[in-house]
Amino acid sequence: MGRPKIVVLGAGLGGTIAAYEIRGAVKDKAEIMTISDSDTYSFVPSNPWVAVRWREPEAIKIHLPPIFKKKKIGFTDVGAKRIHPDQKRVELNDGTSLDYDYLVIATGPDLAFDEIEGFGPHGGHTVSVCHTDHASAAADAFDRFVENPGPIVVGAAQGASCYGPAYEFALILDTELKRRKIRDKVPMTFVTAEPYIGHLGLDGVGDTNSLLESELRQRHIKWITNARVTSFEAGMAHVEEVAEDGSVKAKHDLPFGYSMLLPAFRGVPAVRDIEGLTNPRGFILIDKHQRNPKFPEIMALGVCVAIPPTGPTPVPVGVPKTGFMIESMVTAIAENLAEILDGKEPTHEATWNAVCLADFGDGGVAFVAQPQIPPRNLNWSASGKWVHLAKIGFEKYFLRKVRKGESEPFYEKLALHVMGIRKLKL
Image (cartoon, rainbow, N blue to C red; front, side):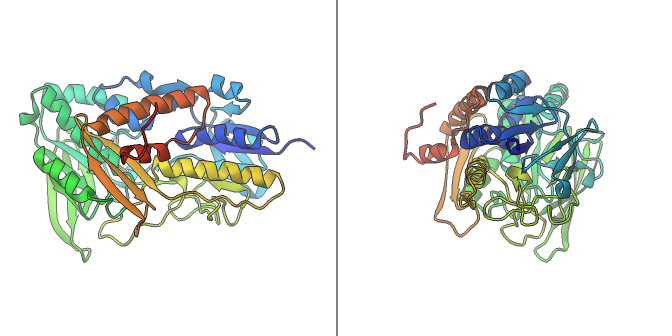
């Protein structure tokens, strides 16, 4: 009988370090295979910089196959078409299949641009920073925009669960437009499903409400909260402002020369609508040990897992899965797989904490929430130019870690550093 086979589905932030850390935890007790739809790792947190040409796409990309080969981890970039949990099989896009004994799902999300008419970079009227290729196209669109400046609309649509990059991009655009001395020609509006500025899908962290409202005010960026986007057309966003009782409080027709809104997320097609595996949005159902209750040989981590919202809001607001949470889920899965291969029951649980650095180009906001969903033991936020420098340092560290095939958890160190508790060595 051969060694058990562990298949990791996805090679983004979560999947890549999961493959590394599982290899370290299980040693030579299992084969490990990674399935991705690309042979390239991209550092997604830097995408807003790519969209204003503060970074070139190649600077935040890493070619994965040689690293995986060195780590003795199998790799294919054919991509998964469908998971067949009853058969313990992953059907690939080329018609072949991979069997598994254990499956770790780390696909990230499917971007639901199609849920709003005229939305998104593929046939729609808005740009995106969700993928590095999207951000590169957004940079081309920004080059055209600055030749003929006009209004900008930035934010996050209903059902979105990742709000930090929306604030980042609005304020990075403000910084870049000032550098080009054309900010005075660009009215800006921030549109968000959040019930208040700085909610972040977390019911706020520390004083994020005041910090982010203050940033928007100082930079003359107007905002609409409880916003439901009904459609986009060329140069125009149609937005409904929803009251507490769910009725439409006001309708806004917002002209724009450039617009980026984050979409709602859902599960990828390969896992969607599998009874017992996913919720109605296609997110993977997991227990406290990251295992699916119906198919316990399947584990999941990152943005693809199902997390309920912090509470009811007039417009649907999702909960973010931050890097701290993802790294914690990775470690729990790696340790649990090691226990399972030793014939033991899994005992490790992820730490549901949130750490975020939101860079504004000339400053930023940092926050730490432990646990992520209130009430909390720690609820901290701060702002300053140091956040921008910390984000640059974090980018360099994380890219170096991926290039070396290392999986050392970093976000907890980052949390202690940003709160001034520990000096950070990069």
